[in-house]
Image (cartoon, rainbow, N blue to C red):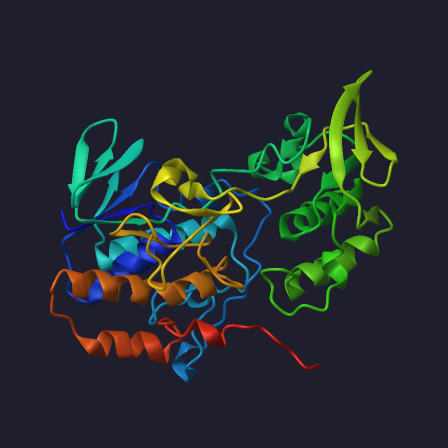
Length: 367
């Protein structure tokens, strides 16, 4: 096998579609569960924060599309899809483009000389190149502070309406934290959000580091219910269970008591941690990559998806990391001495899906 893609989520499927368009077929996509499994696990009420719109006929590709001629907005008639709806979109793409997806859990990956060996429960699969595209939703950050295990990570919530109790504490004020607060207040629960930063007041325009407009709008709705309290610029240092109550020790020296299990909305760790020895790491959390999104210490191993970062550019949304599919595909085909049509890459460039110059990616707004 020339190439193995690990993960049948947006990055793995998006890259697979491009390879098919380039008439490259010597690859396999491995997925440990079902296609779009991470989206299937979203809370029932959670939706994509990036809006979908059928603008590709005017040179404006749907922000959540994975191929130039597709649009989730057209398929579902919605701007903001639920996790289950987006998983269905992924399945439609796999079926339409006849992508080679195989259910298999990669337990370990090694490189011996010029060949990768991927160990699954059934077999060892060998490949010249590997693209790790597992995302991060299956690896929640559960140990961000002492006693964090006493809290319930939002990753494990199936529906906010199912949680019992009248008052809730949410730890984390970014997208998932405010999403939790919005749905809990909509279910007539009182909510306190504790955030170490004031994401809702930042002047930054990049939604990778500031709340998206969709989330800001819902935050205002939640705040207007008078059921929401925001505690910003304070950090939870520890949680202790005392006489049935959850006591949160805060960085300003105060404590906060929650009658219900606190909601942990502190994000995720990179899914690539499973093969962390094959990458160099910055601050233990960011995998170091070449300009082609390749491991700096393991030749032939590429990273696709929300864990890709270059300098100050964070590719954590679909419309961002889909810009790098073509970079990886071109590099692999060039090294394999495989002929391909430049017209395909031209189409991807025209649709802002082939980002080679990383110097143009600062997000600034003047008003």
